[in-house]
Each structure stands twice: as structure tokens, then as C-alpha cells.
Image (cartoon, rainbow, N blue to C red):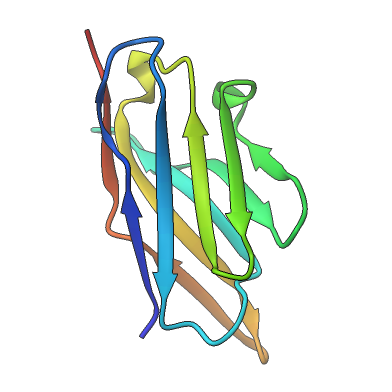
Length: 119
């Protein structure tokens, strides 16, 4: 049973920083894609950043230049360094891992971690 567990969320003032971590367990293979999504109250879940294998990350326009995603392919972990946080970054942040393994697609989600940006 694959599990993704996020940590690092919390309350931070505008302009502050947080680092989210997502640790996986139960997988016997390296995930093709790992990334972060977020969902604010009353809004759809949206992509924040994704990292394919050892390639550079892809970011949503709203976080470019402020957020940095990285992953450890050996440990199947992914991180999100968030700087210059804004109130509009307030959301539940979810870790995701997806891809295809031996012709079978997979799509795993963590339980989410709350990030609140407020003074």
C-alpha cells in the first residue's frame, strides 16, 4: 500500500517562508512524476509544481520565482520550498505521485497539509 505523507504546513505571515515535505512509503518503483497541488476554500484543486524524474520542475504562473520544488528520486520524496508567501497562497497543499508502471497507471495522493498566510 503506497502512502504519501506531507508535513511542514502551518501559519506564516505574508512575506514569510515554509518548506513542505512529502515522504512516500510502500512503493517498489520510482515514481514517474511527483508534485504538489493545492486547494483553497471554494476553489478547484490546482497544480502548483511537478517534477518529472530528474528534470527541472514545472510551476504554476502564480508561484514562479517564489516556490521551488525538488525531489529525491532514490527516496521517492518531494519538497516544496515556498518563499515570499502571499495570503492567496493559503490552501491545503497535497502531494501527488503518478505515472505508469508495467502498463498500469497510478495516481497517489497524500492527505494534505494546511498552509495559512495571514498577518
